[in-house]
Length: 148
Image (cartoon, rainbow, N blue to C red; front, side):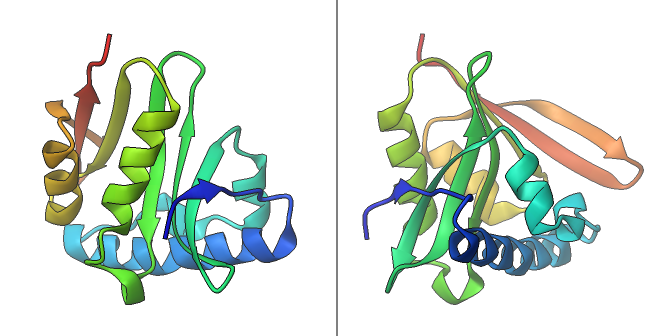
């Protein structure tokens, strides 16, 4: 299942991506023991973001996606896999495809206690650059992949 661009202007795609995100972020929230703002986003919120999207589809329906901005370097905004599709290499495939389609340094952040995501980024060559606490009790790990 090769990652391909996703168009959130398509209603079915947008609603499927939204559902995948909600299910994936619920798992992350449980892992890190903290609420995640993305759990409160609507389809309209997703569409309003200036993001580029790649996804993996099964029977035409997205089951995993990565979204990023590329204004000043590449910043991965979100990477989600439907829990029913965990541990099948989809997140790695999405990161690999994103890196193949873009140039320049890449940044990303994730819950510091989200061990699967931290491991994924480290295996992909990202270096941890630090931690931030955007709200009390939520520790977020920051990463960068320098490709310059």
